[in-house]
Image (spheres, rainbow, N blue to C red):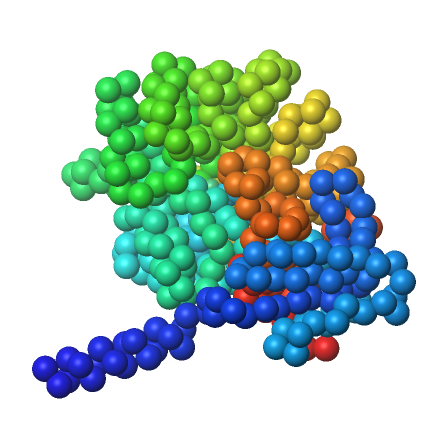
Length: 433
Ligand SMILES: [Zn+2]
C-alpha cells in the first residue's frame, strides 16, 4: 500500500511538472512591434496584447513607439520589438500519428508505436507555429487518444479535431491493400453500401471522432487503385454526410478525380482534400455548395526532390508524378475560379514541421501573401467551425499567437521560422534574442 501511495504521489507530482496550463490568476502580456489583423490585412503598430486565463483579454495599439502601457508587477511581459504577431496557424489536413513510411514499411508499425509517433509529431507541429490541426486519418483511434492527452495537459501539441479511421470502400484508397487474400487484412474504416456506411459513421463517432473523413476516390499512396476513379457513389456519400451532419460532425472528402469531387460536393461534404483533377463542373458545384478545397500542394514539391532518396515504391512514384503535374494546373484554376481555400498540407507524407512551406506555393499559384495567410487562419477556422475561438487575434479568442520577425504579408516564408509560439496563453517556443 505504501508503495502504491508513494507511486501515486510521484505520479501526481510529475503530472504537475508536465502540466503546462497557466494558473488561473496568471497574467501575461506581449509587447510587439506589429500585429496583423488577418481579416482586413491591416497592420497595427506598437501593440500590447494582454492575456488572461488563456484568452486574449485586450489588444491596444499606439503608433507612438514611445508610448508604453503600465502593467501590474505580477504581469509577465514578453518583449518582441521586431516581431509581427499573427494568429496561431491552422493546418486542416495532417496525419500526426504517421511518419513518412511507404508501402510495405507501413506494415511493421503497431498501433501503440503509432500513438507514440503522434506524441512526437504533436510537439514538432506546435513548435512550427500550428496551434490547431484537423487530423484526417489514423489507425486504432490513436488521434483521438492524442487529442485527449493534449487537452488533459499530458503532453504539448496543437488543438486537434480528429477523424479516427477514414471511411473507404473495400480495396479503396483508405483500405489496406498490401497483403494477399490469405491475410484477410481490412482497414478499420472500410464500409460498402448505404447501410454499412451509416453504421460505420456512427461507430466512428461513438469512439470519439470530431470530424468524418471519407475516401471518395482512389489515391496516390495506395496499391492498385486509380486516383481518377470514383470509389464511393453519390448515394453512399449522401448517406455519410446526412448522418455526420445530424450528429454535428463535418465531413472531409479525399478526392482526386473530377467526378468524385463533384459527387462529394453535391452530397454536401464540407471540404475536398487534394482536388487534383478538379474541372469546370466540379468548381461550379463546389462554389454553389460553399465547399472548401484543401489543396495540399507542397507535398508535390517535396516529393519531386526526395522521392528517390526516400525510396518511394514505383507503384506510388509513377502515380505521384502524373497526379502532381495535373494537380498544379487544376488547383490553380480552382483558386482563380473563386473556390474557397483552407490551408492543408498532408504532413506525414513529408516530415512534420515543414507545414508552413505550403504558404509559398499558394502565392506561386496566384494568391497574395495575405490571402495565403487567411487560408490558415480565418478560412481554416471557418472550415473547422471554430471561428468563435481561433483564426484571428481578437479579444475573447484563445491566446493562440505566433510571432515572426519581419512582415509576413511581404514574405510568407517568414512563417517557416516563428520566433515565438503561444497556445492558450502558454509559450511553447521562444527563440533566444
Ligand atoms: Zn491525407
